[in-house]
Each structure stands twice: as structure tokens, then as C-alpha cells.
Image (cartoon, rainbow, N blue to C red; front, side, top):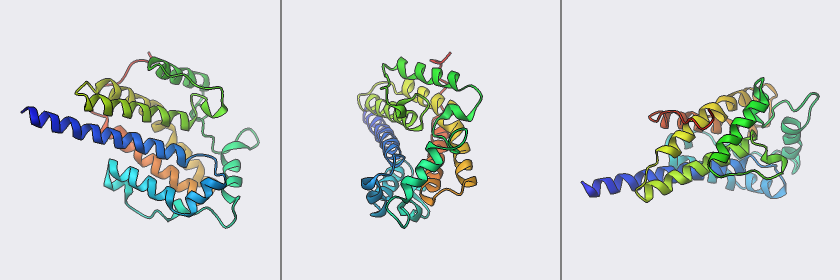
Amino acid sequence: MGQTIRETTKEGAFEAAARSRAYLVLVHALEYPDAEHVEEIRSHALADALCEALGRVDPALAAGDWSALADAGADDDDLAVEYTRLFDVGSGGPPCPLYGGLYGDARMKTMEECVRFYNHFGLTLSDAPRELPDHLATQLEFLHFLAFREAEARDEGGDPGPWRRAARDFVERHPGRWVPKLRERLERQKAAPYFTALVERLERFLAEERARLSDVGPYTAQS
């Protein structure tokens, strides 16, 4: 019986570590496409890394055509121009903001709730604009942290429940809620295939996360 528990614990640690890695690769894939980033895209290195990371979580997440994730456009600055158009500028704000609080009517409440999650786990944000609490990269980095700590707990024979409950509630309340809206806006804007395909993959991953974590009750740090 002891050996079975040990094997189950290690298997769970591997799964959580895979999820943690997938979040980190997604954060990287969402970065501003400077020359180095564009080269990663064109060389298929980024698509391969994301495919491998998601496939380790669930082979179904790696299925399908990945060619759009290697499409950086004809010119070196095509993706940079498109990134600015979609995410950075626009009359009244960008058409596809990467800030979750802009997909509802109470951004300040959304940011405050995110900060309570982060602070509860001893995390603080830098002063960089990208580090605003409702930015997609910030939210995904937090989920990476929770999955990493879950993997540690499982590997050491501890209780993974608190990390899983926090992740379940955070996905449910934050990126799992608004990333589908982001994907819809990208489609309406006829965004470059790279960005649409990337957010589609992210949306699928978050949907699977919600299902995977559905066996735990909601976390209540925000109340």
C-alpha cells in the first residue's frame, strides 16, 4: 500500500509540474514580438516548445495544426505592428486588451481581488506596466506558481489541496472568464494567425484546467 501511495504522489507531482511549465511557456509566447522572439516563432522553436509543454499535460492539447504558431508574417516587424494594433493602442483603448478588468464593469474590484490572491501567498508586483494585477501574463505567472507549489507538495508527500483550490478559483474568476472574450475580439479584428491560434490554445488549456480542478471546493481568500 505504501508503494502505491508513493507512485500516485509522484505521478501527481509530474502532472502539476507539467502544468506549471505550460503556463510559463504561454507567458513567453505572449511577449512583445521583438527580433529574437520573431526568430523563435519563425524557426518553429516556440511552437515546438508550447506543443511539448501542453502535450505533457494532455496529449489532446497538442493535437491539430500548429502552423499558425510559426507564422510571423512576411516582414520582420509584422507581428510587432500587429501586437501594437491589437493590444496597445486604439481610440478609447486597444481593441483586444490583455487586462482582464477591462472585460467587465468593475476593473478596480477585479484588480483588488487579484492582489488579495497574490498577497495571500506572499507575492508582490513590480512597478512595470506589464505587472498590473489583471494583466494576462501576471495572472498566468500566478497560476504557474500555484502549480509549481502543488508539484512540490505532492513530491514531498504534503497536501496539494490548498494550491489546487486557489488555482481552481482563480482560473474560474479571472483568465478562465475573460480569455474566451479576448479570443472573440481577436477573431472580429481578423488578427494575425499567430495571436488567434495562441489564444485559442490558451483558452483550451484553461478550460481543461477548470475541469481538472473541479474536484476541489472553491478557495475563499478573496472573500
